[in-house]
Image (tube, rainbow, N blue to C red; front, side, top):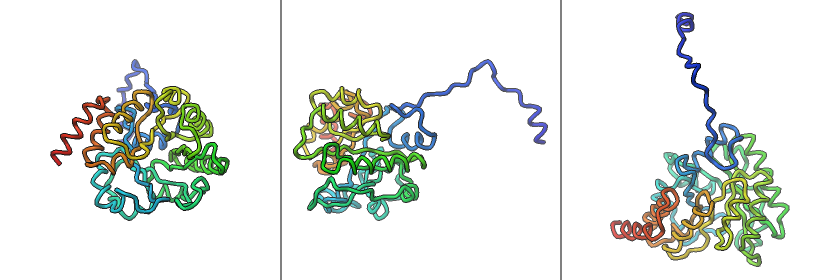
Length: 292
């Protein structure tokens, strides 16, 4: 029977050249299939962007406003997030295993808010990341900080381990209190992380020159939401960032500390994935809030 099937094979369509479609994500075309598949679980292949929901703050802050009960306050938001950025402890204890979006695990840590925060070590093995089906590992990188070299080394070690196992490395550029949050610094920090192998980078949006930050970084950039600001302002922030080259947002407090977090994350999605104007997104937020 097998021989007959082979002899009958004739639909080769030789006149149609086989296509090799480029991967949709900036700087990722030459990565291995498994790593690209995981990235497609973080970034939408349709928009090329992501809405990451960050709630890993407890790894150095402990219980935080809006994160006192993750089972009650965060789990209802997860259906609207492309990706969750969290610690392995919360993933294991609180997140339903039926969640099918990307998982980005906090992979560095050590000091609490009571100590010097830049003094971090790798706090997650790649075996653990594989075991938990992570799409990426997130590591803090303190460019210009006292422990800059150590944090960069933490990142490069994770890059090597991640590449061996097809898991992305997210470099999170931390800005010290005494450092200027300007485009010059962001260009330096993001470019260093990309040059040393980070799969993608998380940084802050700056009003003057963010487009040069995005253009100068050869891998995708997602922007941090930062401290809580009014909902309308947060939607403006997301809009400006993606219009100037960001591949999405990694928001935490501006979602889970909003007056209506479920409405807020849906409004953010519209801005990021559908280019909805901030004013329209805020109207949507108000409507959803009144309905919920």
